[in-house]
Length: 162
Image 1: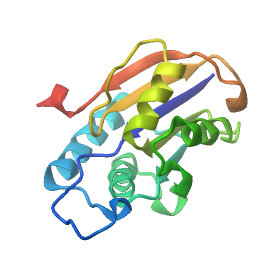
Image 2 (image 1 turned 90 degrees about the vertical axis):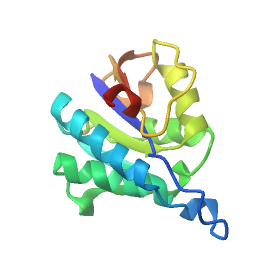
Image 3 (image 1 turned 90 degrees about the horizontal axis):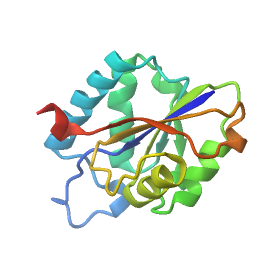
């Protein structure tokens, strides 16, 4: 059995108009939401075996907060530039390429790719994953490369905790 947790990056700031999209930081609300949801998740599940983040500043900052809450070494955080894509293609490739040594993984990525992925591989339709939303999907397969439709075991987001 394999379990994937996918986290949409927390709320980012549009305050800085002169920076590239890739470099947009989290806004204060996003930082607070990441702390809130990472604390919730750390109480609910065992620490995933591997943490992987998009290279975008907002996803990376979100993943660092989760690493800290889970006690996951930052030196082991994998940064994947290809996850900075708004297509599910790179997310699917990333998940299917996971080492079978890992039974669970958490990936920090972006809106459209996540929505498409969870509706393709999860068993509960989700129309929109809010910022800092978390989806967990459990698969029966033993090998990541063979994953098919799994069971959506978690869908949560900040507004459920306020």
